[in-house]
Image (tube, rainbow, N blue to C red; front, side):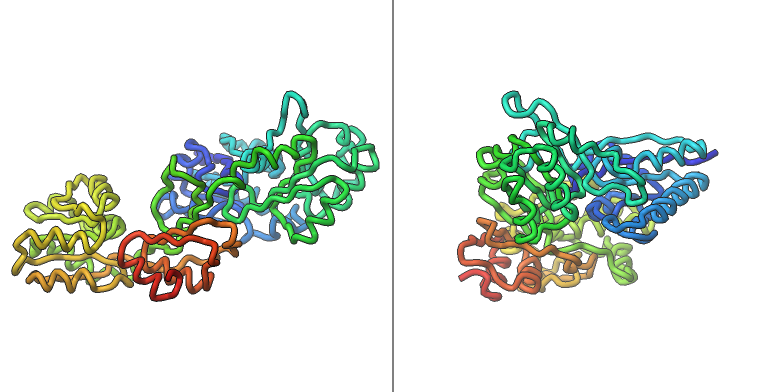
Length: 466
């Protein structure tokens, strides 16, 4: 028996633009072979023990020539993993069928009689157009649209592009064209395209770093160089590009930079850009924590100060061979609704959730209870402060804390034009500290909002707010 391969479109960049079907397949895969532009947060949905292989580890990068050897390595890897009876996901940028060497992978799978399925994805052209207010077709301005590569295989003896015909198409959407933009413009002008034709370039479509440049055909290459535009980018040529000025909803909206880990909430006023400034990771050693979990019946209360404390507590409970029945007769406190809801995922209804979702609110609620001499267990992160522990001890409780997870600064945080945002929202003191470490300061024109008094205090301490 041989394994099976799914060729899955991951979308143009923003992780939640993958299809539901693609995400479900990812969760079941034994092996994920992914393009280097795929958002790494998608890999967090893979199951424990899944083998994750970045295509960059196999050879040349996407924008380099000499890709043939690189692609052969990918093909060979697909076949080898499938013959090992693995469930394989080939996670490709955008849509698998658009400029992604799709046919080469299908050919080798077919030749080797490997079963496969294809899962379409949102391609970069559609994302770039939708996120810049440019309709790719329009009843008045453009009844046709053609996708064109701006970077053909250098080993070809002759180009397959008919620039004479392409120059007459209503809307041209060019992939991988930034590095050859001068040459492409020259060809379009040579074959009769009006030099005043509107053009839009969308760099990093769907990402927090998305940039848009609009101009005319005669000036676009010069302006792109001046502004330092670089791949990945989509170039849209045609009359419809001028509609960006009128319909670019993304440019016109209030921009909010959200620095927490909470899932995106919709129907808020403004456009929210999620950039988590903290990353949650497991500990290297759970010996101490597991000992407390195994003897959890020694406690009267477990108080969870975050949903991650909940998640890792129950992971360790399962790892040492127990389930929630071990918690019978123990009362449970949760700092807020997200923590309360995470407890519900494990079949636990919190006994106490404060009206004010904060450590201060939690302590206020406990003041109404008699916890003199009560034993409280606090699962916490490796960098959380001891404010909650001290407050409970003042109320006479016997408090035990133990690290359940690590809170670290994410790697490779992008460069940002902070002036483009109207507001920055901080959800935790660690997010404040990591922002200060990476971005130094906040422009005066940008409003700062903090969730919780502790976060506000930290922002003032680091002079990010007056």
